[in-house]
Image (cartoon, rainbow, N blue to C red; front, side, top):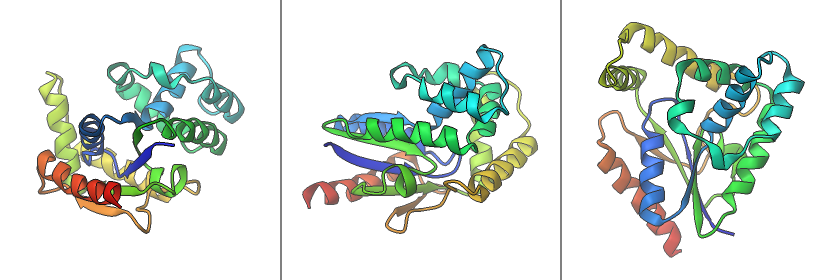
Length: 210
């Protein structure tokens, strides 16, 4: 079994960028588990299937191929909105958690990022990180990301969306977003991605040397 690094945190905290950098540095496989929910939502939308039928959504989740997750395609706003509706369904979560756990066993190691990796998917992971930042900072990052692509964005609307997403992620009954008791906290509000990487690397190297 490989070495597992579990990274959790709210939207736009920087955990995706950090996770990919860690995976590259250590030669580990990376999985953005949020994309598994987005891929399920995309499959439902493309097939013209309802987003409120839990049985149909669960069956679709079982058929998702983790090798075919295209970040650029799946980052579409409409897919994200649909994903957040099916992500609260226990059957969908069970199906995707099973696939994520299977992925986590790859050698030589894996980096999984999401909302419930350290608490639910891989509670046995030797390294757990909880990456966060203030809602204001996260909304600003999302705003700047959209503007950089040449698209128009409304900061206040994005800020409201970030707060709503946090409430939904942290308040759901099944696998709520929260730090694992033994997770290392990284607040990136005032931290560059390089500083966050160096902090994470210290925790990872210590665990690898144990």
